[in-house]
Image 1 (tube, rainbow, N blue to C red):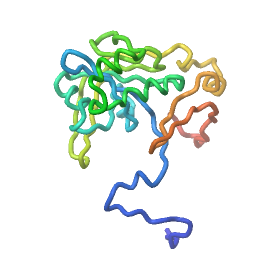
Image 2: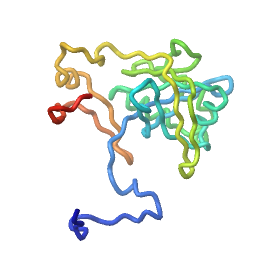
Image 3: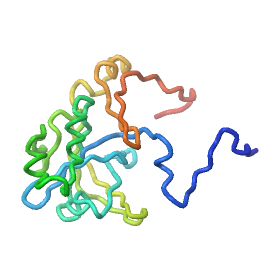
Image 4: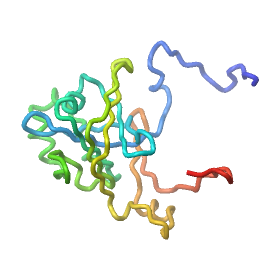
Length: 203
């Protein structure tokens, strides 16, 4: 395979993180944990299904309360916000250093409710909600770690559930998805297309 002489490309310096130099689309979720006598909600965009079974994972740092809360209590929730919940989602990123009490000043004002199987919060209007037991925590990705969980309970808003007799394009046009465009932007996904899989390909 021939290599082009960087025509149309710019080499990135890998001695520092490259991600600030390019846009990337990512899911945006809010992780719910128990913290002391209260709760915490924190947004994450490095989040993903950990395979095709009922596992979910996300990137976090041991410096954050979310990491320590999951180590201590062994469970967490995942809320996928709808686009109209963008401001609510943004508020969950409020720093404890900037406010006297995140629990009193932020969490009490959010539209959160208790999860079904765990004493943890979920966003009330999230289109998908997961309740997870800690599975594996893998440290060592620089200053970050991957936290994974086994999904013990899940629920989806009826309008967002895939059903065989519904046109998926129409469904997503009417019920948009919220996507984080790293670093620092977001998108409301309205228009989608069928992926052109090869004829013999099976999902």
